[in-house]
Image (cartoon, rainbow, N blue to C red; front, side):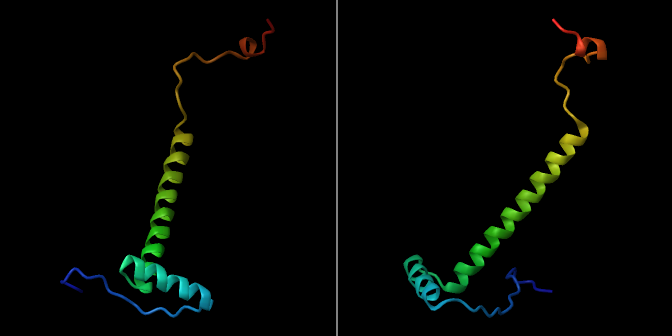
Length: 84
């Protein structure tokens, strides 16, 4: 258990095209950060988007199951099929 509040980390080896690594170095330098920090930020963003999508999907499905009451009165079969 860590009491310092710092998240535990794990090393990860990636194989990327040389041009991608070069571009990442430039972006990291411009932002004053490291490639590792860029990768961590992007993965955290993707994971957050996935959590948000999963939550929104669950809420939408729950709303569909409950249904929506639009305030009108239900039509009888005859009323629904009556021609005007």
